[in-house]
Amino acid sequence: MSAGDVPVAPDEIVLRVKKNELGPVEEWLAAGNSADSFDSRGDPLLLLATYFGATCSSDCAMTKLLLSAGATVDLKAGDDCTALMAAVLCSSGARAGAELARLLVEHGAGSEFTRINPRRNRARVGR
Image (cartoon, rainbow, N blue to C red; front, side):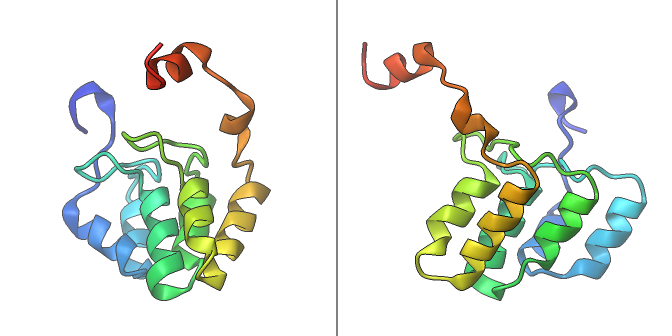
């Protein structure tokens, strides 16, 4: 765990997520580690699995594994990006991106779009 009790995955697990290598990640999760872990840069594993699944492996397997292990579907990275946003960004050029977006929505992704934070939006436009 890191400061603030945010689980941070070891670099080796992050690499396995990015490479879509299920076995080591399954073992790590079975050992009691959290599917809601982040990498050292502040990106959730689910976001990484979705992005790399759409752009590199054209496979939903890692995203499915993390979801089945209880990953929070709308967990945000430091830049407020979610796995659904990553899937949508990748969907124009990769069929897997659209499939991943559909999978995430089926698991409840997108609820963050129904909540608007006016104070934050004003700050972004300089008001």
